[in-house]
Amino acid sequence: MLYSTKRSGVPAKAAAPGDVFYCTDSREVFYACADGTLLCLSDLLHGSLQRVREPGPKGDRGDRGHQGDRGEPGKPGKDGQDSEVPGPQGAQGTSGHDGLPGHDGRDGKNGRDGVDGKNGVDGRDGKDGARGPAGDVLAVGPDELKVAVETARQQLLARRAATQAAIEQARIDAKRLTHGVRAVLFNALNDVERANNG
Image (cartoon, rainbow, N blue to C red; front, side, top):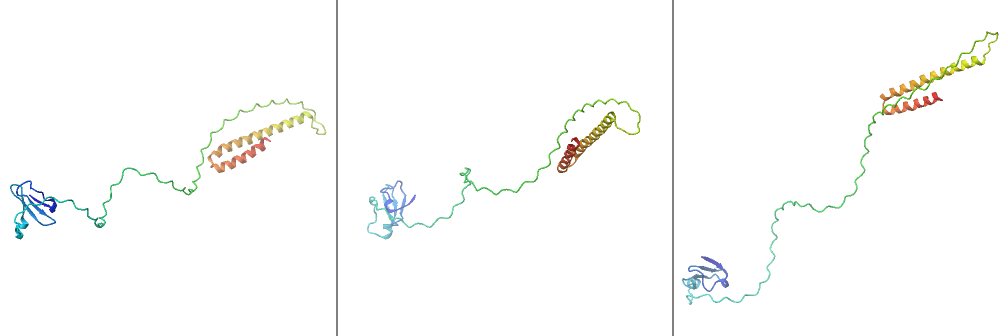
């Protein structure tokens, strides 16, 4: 087997016959004989007086050499694999600008109709007074005045009842209108109702 080593690395005896040791520093070649003795073939080829010799004992270890020059930078390595471990949380960002105003909301559904109030008790009619004889001068007596006042009161109550009924019907019909128009109409109906009940 061929071994390549420095001169100091050549052993005193070979492990197996036929081994060849080549010294990289001195360029000497040693051949192992059957008894393990190493013969220097370089001396035989160069015609040296010492035809055969064995390597001397290993010398002392030399001083450590100086540090060599720094090599050139290596080529960039390949990109590493993406880490599956999440990184630390970053700092909180600045507040964003205010957004645009939202659209107007839709009109709500109409409320339920209120319960109609009970009708009031009708007043009792007064008794008709006796009719007096016709005179030359028309004079309105207390009984006739009372009848006229009562008649006028009944007519007034009837007109108020009719007006109130018209107001309630207008409120019912207004439910089909839009919210803004219905609100204006309700305000006007309230004014009429207050004047009718005044």
